[in-house]
Structures are given as C-alpha cells and as structure tokens.
Length: 150
Image (cartoon, rainbow, N blue to C red; front, side, top):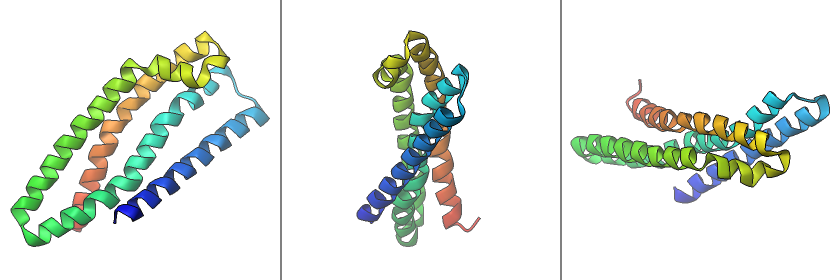
C-alpha cells in the first residue's frame, strides 16, 4: 500500500510540474503582465502541495480506516478524529512556516526577477498557503464519507 501511495504521489507531482511548465510556456509565448506572472509564480507551490494532499491522503488514510472500521467501530472513529486533529495541526505548522518564510522561499526561486517581484510573490504565496488546511480537512472527510457510502 505504501509503494502505491508513493507512485501516486510521484504521478501527481509530475502532473503538477507539467502544468507549471505549461503555464510558463503559455506566458512566454503569449506574454503576460506583471500581476499574472506574480500569480503564476505564487500559485505553484500551494498547487503542488494541494495536489499531493488530494492525491495521496485518501490512498494512505482510507485503507487504514476501513480496516479499523471492520475490526472495531469505536476505535476507527477515534482514529478518524485523531488523524483529523493531527493532520490539521501539522498543516497549520506548515502554513505558519510558509507564512513566516514566504519571502526567502520566493527569493530562492525568483530572485533574478527583482525585489518587487519577490515581494509580491511572497505576499500572494503566504495567502495562498491558507488553502492547505481546508484541503486536508476536505480530503479526510471525503474519505470518511466515501467509506460510509455518502
């Protein structure tokens, strides 16, 4: 099961990378204004993270939850609540790290574009990272409701 999750994660990461390359190619060919360039630069990391979360968390969580649900209903519900709590806290920590370090991260990737580009990208990146927590919650509840055929 772990190997399959890694394979799916790699496939989603490659897909997202190809989408990013596609966006860069389109803006290079057809041109883009400064704001669109900033947006495309800022959305790349959150898009990759959300894609990986949606693509792998189901595959990792659902089999474990299903196995527990068959063996012990109460233990499975406790596992769901614990997983939800732990992953929300973990994603909040990731959000906080990206919020604090959005400027150095943007500078690492885009310093050749200039200070104004880095500053604007960092601002948008820090805001877009707020999508991480809802994606974790939606994925876990989606797996939960899927198992219960809702």
